[in-house]
Image (cartoon, rainbow, N blue to C red; front, top):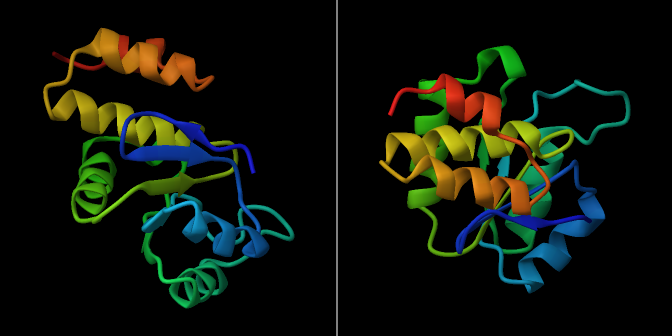
Length: 138
């Protein structure tokens, strides 16, 4: 697992394995957000299997699948709502972590966070959100 924190509550990752979930729970993650549509890649664990493993480990889950073309205010708001509803740290995953970071970034703009702060946090995690941030009002 290559977990990359974005802020005090949210971290992102590329696709995780079913076997990783118990370790994530031990590390304190309370919510697992899947931003990846089922069947995107051959061999990708389906969300239902990931959710069952997360429940068995004592974690909550949210299935918020998006493609890059779908990223916008509505999915970012759903992402923000899921994070706000969690009683602890959140790990969001997709193929590479980029879509998760895009959702987190838009949610941050919607919440009024400074763009420079969002840009720096994403950059520190290895994601360049400059084009996205430059395209957003605010």
